[in-house]
Image 1 (cartoon, rainbow, N blue to C red):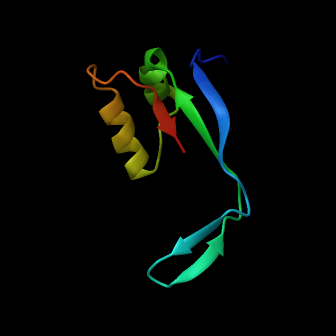
Image 2: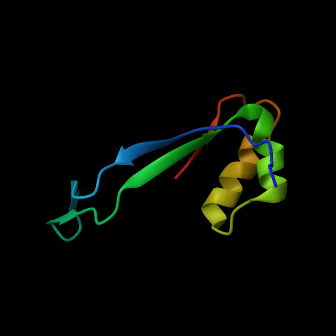
Length: 78
């Protein structure tokens, strides 16, 4: 079934093995997995929310905020 949801990507955001520093523990860690981004186009947001959606609270809130008609940039999905 085709959902006709327009996206740009996936785009590689952070490569596996990239170091990052935890200031609390004062320790360097390395990313274990690649991180990719998808950008949902403005005209496809409502269809994405209806047919796919999210289970993670912060992503749900971000999608709801993006469904506001005054918001015009694409949604960045991590």
